[in-house]
Length: 298
Image (cartoon, rainbow, N blue to C red):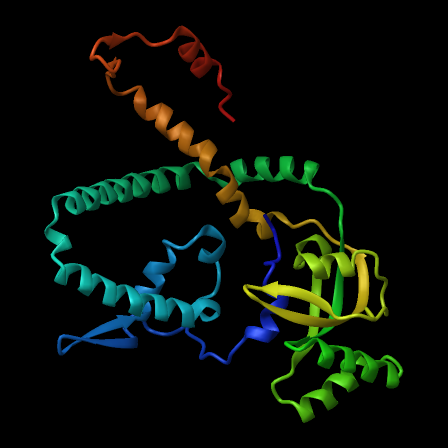
């Protein structure tokens, strides 16, 4: 948790200019798919709904950051849904049963989410925060300049250029971008060292402020490689997150605990009978009952 995305340091190599969608109306159309002569529209509202089904680490991302892949994914899903219906799969009994299972699962999740949210008061989350801070290790963080290359030789030439300019990274980068507008780079604000991509983390683990890493740092990006040229600006002890900064992560961390509390409380209102694989009644194990009673509330 509290991790700087391993790809965050690659952001400058991947970022494209996107219009801000934070204030865009939910009804704004972001894509149209022509299916059998009918225009299927995909809106900002649909993208926001789809974000709720993404992995937890992506759900908190600004829509701007994942806009392009989310639009493309929505387009693809519209096409696949059409093809599935065209193949008659929406009438297949097994598929219908699985859809019903999914509907039940969504109802269960919606109920649990609502109940858990009521239990995750600031008072309760503060208790989890205090425990977390006790075990959170101390670590350093650094700010640094970076330039990102697809070609190792160009990265090596850039390092020579920096040295020739007395270590002036910004000047070398500016001149490099004048020659090659595709060159990405700039200043990265403070990042905890263990949260950097693995090779960058290793390269800068002991580097002090003002140090230029004199070899390109290779990071794998899928089947390809990118090469970082980096210079440390400042190194300092990282501050531990405040309660407000950690609050979103704390909610995710405490979901299993509160989900179990909600489920156990719900069971008490219902008579439950269990049977073995031959249909014979199964008595509740005494140890299970005692464990349930002894389980701490917090």
